[in-house]
Length: 293
Image 1: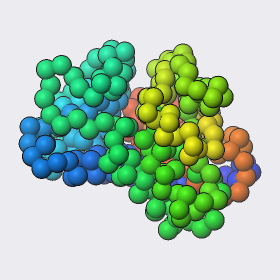
Image 2: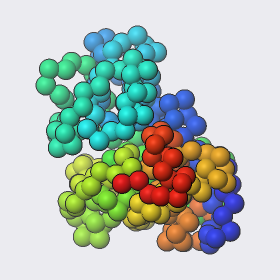
Image 3: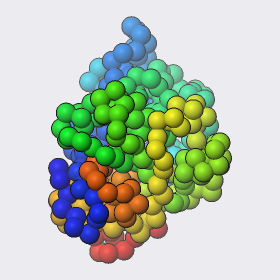
Image 4: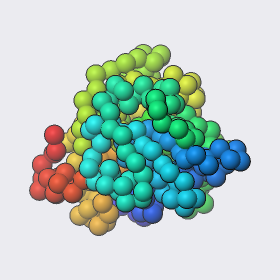
């Protein structure tokens, strides 16, 4: 979809992953990872750690295959996403952010059985995400820049891995919220660094640090990273709703905020609108012209 944005120096196109059956791109990686699991591996169920969108992808696939799904979620996960997981039949265990991050790194949770699908560091998940890159080349000619929200890095790395062979001139920029932008800080330092992190309505992106393996995978593929304020991100959510009647969550609007800011440059830019699972009260606040806490 083309976004009419005369205030931007770029020609902006939108890749609307928010229109996927679960409201985000995560169904691509979850489906690929679970479908390609070793025979019998998922018989006892599946497990993931997620703030909501990957959880929905895993729960969707588990329901399709008739196996249980358990989700380890951070305490700040929005109720909208938790309710969606429950509707899909998933069981949610909420934990403090630090415990959630430990589960992300370890790939296990005490007392819970099941085939672990890592939301980021899983080759099959990244390959599933990479299908977006293949579709972009089929759908839009002469792309100068692709802007991708950075949560754990699996989406950005998947897309950036798929593009070089088909569109080598296209650069990929990651987009992070200012409330937790470890990739931008790490690129500036030339090494992984930790940053201060504050949970916000941009719950699908932003963290205190990079997963070590993801840093090594992403660094050679990316042209850089942009950091967006909460006000810029909320404004992008409003603009998408007003001009395209598309509802994006905070993380999904980061790419549009970056394009509108002018910091992504000129030319033909594609924004990955990664998800649309935003809490109704937060959306109402944004549509009223305010930025949620």
